[in-house]
Length: 317
Ligand code: 3PG
Image (tube, rainbow, N blue to C red):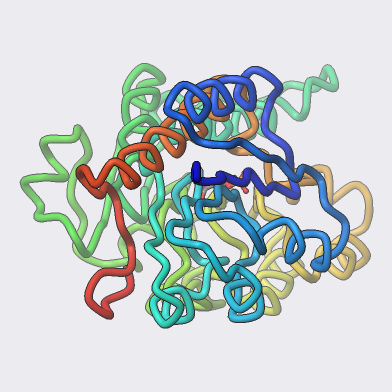
């Protein structure tokens, strides 16, 4: 019997991307099913009960999910971050988990500049703004997203610095950024952009001390994950420092509190959040990551190369 592939997304992919995933599956003799915009977990559990492969986005895949996914062999996160997936649970249930690194990186990098430029021009309200040429840019994490951020920042004439604990200084220099040696040094830059995954090491790692150390007029851009920031510290820093700004694509839990504390005029000056995480919400990113996920599943069932597995031999990446 043919294998069933379930596309399960609370935040749906663009139409064309879904069509491309379906086509790849069917061309390779796989049965394609989809569950988009599901409202409760029961719907997901019912849909995944018979699937042998599943494609998800930021959908939470916990122990309960895996216990319902009785036939599941492979779970592909169409995207980069696997923080919503319980990897030890997947391993215990014998499920191979993969991601599709790099496929939506350019989309995220473009959002960084979209938010930064709109902010620097006062959201186009007619008031005089400021330029970014000559500003320093500090990148915490220098992976796939930062590579695209660096290319754009070079065009804008920024002074680019980066720190990444997994890269050597030479590797960072080769990518076009000046290597820095720790996180506090990054926070000395005019604009700081976060490009690290949410891991045991990074969660809650951006604290008040780092926020307060930013230079006058500092802008912190977070297109990574909200939980790498200590949100109580963020609120405090924004209130204490009217010159600091936070632009984010993953809405802080305390967004309402931040807005109330700052008041409307300062919110406009200091605080931008997208209503839904939308860094990867482009036609191209949806297609790239969806197609990559479908191809990885085809390859998995063919017994070919297992790409980008994130739970190998009990190790979880
Ligand atoms: C990622 O980790 O790839 C991005 O955060 C995109 O997440 P999304 O698929 O939920 O938009």
